[in-house]
Image (cartoon, rainbow, N blue to C red; front, top):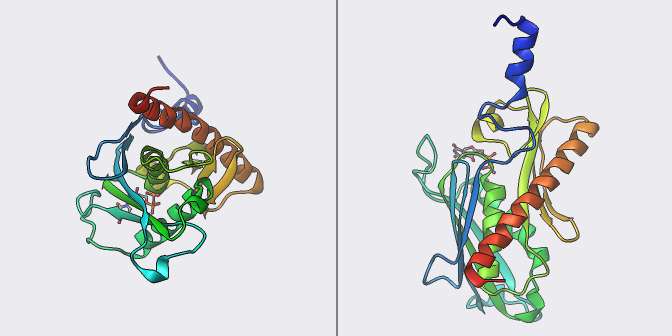
Length: 239
Ligand code: UDP
């Protein structure tokens, strides 16, 4: 078969490098409640990402300055294992992990009914065992399942997914490769029931139309992922 260079270009650009359609997420698996000692836990695989989350609490805040008389406080720690990335990650917090920890707590907080637990603290530990792009979103999605597994009263789940621009096209759930080569990436977290946005970041350049298309696509991705979150909890707790 002989094809023209134009046809070749069209065919080779239609699929993404890993063969996914523009609106397709990577293969996703979520399991709830896998750690014995934690009050709640989850394990998530999204493409090459492997993430473990442990939740402790709500429990009385031992540190006085943490205590709020009217509500609980949520603390998050996002951590990448030294062996989670191609080039060894130096252990301990860095600018990036401090930022992701902060935005994760902010993305989760609106879903939690914190007033039920005055003077308490909820600790969320997100351990990235292997990273392949989009770990902040995957961490939020997994943390929400772990919080539900801990029995934390919640208004809704929180679910996150990124969309972005790669080779001039708006695509869902960028892989590490696409994130590196791509023009833009917007991680989004929502409460799926009322679509309240609890995280919206933007890296790179998009026109207003592209931004709106990416946001819509990210929200669609979130709704797909939310189904898998719910299935994970159903498997553990039944209907
Ligand atoms: N990454 C890496 N080394 C690092 C930090 C990140 O190799 O020290 C990789 C990792 O696969 C991560 C990706 O780069 O998922 C994109 O990182 P980014 O800061 O955009 O956050 P993420 O997309 O994981 O939320």
